[in-house]
Length: 469
Image 1 (spheres, rainbow, N blue to C red):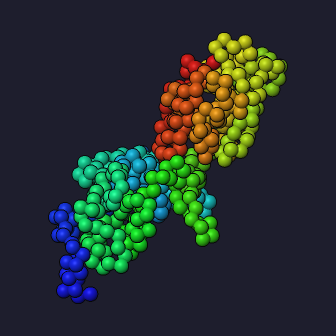
Image 2: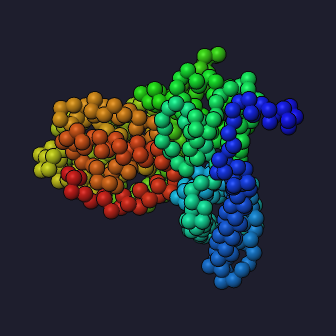
Image 3: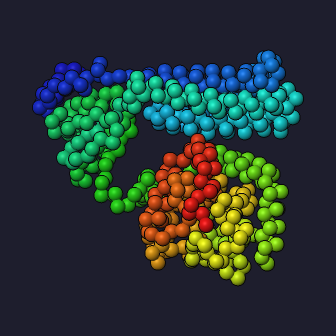
């Protein structure tokens, strides 16, 4: 269609001139901006890691020996490969300094693991200093995190949190923008989903010029037309379906030729599970090595005070709703033990031994769960696994909150977000359960390795707790 024909088609369609805010010359080139910011982040990461390993050289030898440079040359390309494959260089990383720092930490931990395999498994460790490697890795985590947080805050101040153009089209249905979308009223702008009308498609294309995402709110009978009209728009297109709110779908798949709603999946991708598992093994292994003698002393004290095994085993529910045996130091007399957990321990509970009371008040009774962590049944941080018979106001936990079993999407933990917020001990009221569940689901939804490290640090402050008895 030539220019004259196109002009005639627009006139026949009753087209009005576009509002100035929709003209291409007034739309920022977000793609070019993102590339510049990704390059800036890369340079800041490189500077942070380079300084970290040079500083490690100085700490180890008192001067720059070159070991830090050699280690950096190996670990930084690995970090980039992992980071670009993950989300260390992504739009969410641009929008949130915390997300940026957390994704960088995940990538760096994986890069350190790969470098460890290269340096030691391939027997090239003699060309590198182990201390420089270890010190430099720790410094890198600190400097990269600080650099990402500072740079992220500066970018948000300079550009806001909009790093791509998104358009929300309202066509006979109401919807509130979820972010910084440009809201377009289809009726006021003369837009219509007409796949067989070139002029209408052209007008729609000019409204969406430079956009990378379009969200359409329209009645159900117009969804097919909008789908066809935007199928070739060269951008992400989403059609809102509010009636699906009762079925919280997280994606759309196909069963053969039939569309199917995806309502559940593992919350952590493979690389995140790998990082979490590496951290679990490292922390649990180091803790057991350091605490082996104190744990043997605790076991001996338990056996001396009362007859029976030093360890208490109880069936609880883990990841994927699978049952497993949790290990704890026995704190009650064997004949009074509650294997189902139907009765929570109370203050001054006669079933608790003197040694058990001390262990409970200091949370030392939980130490054997380090073995559960090494076995892969638990994690250091995660939702606490509850006894199957636990109740509040005479109702089982899963009968109180419909989302209770959602907690089992990841491994249970020795500590968790609920615990560091003070939700621990006996559950007398239903709200005690719902608060725990809410915190656990918040943890799962926003997981990153930085949050795990923060929860571990905060756990030290709640080991002795008024509700621990």
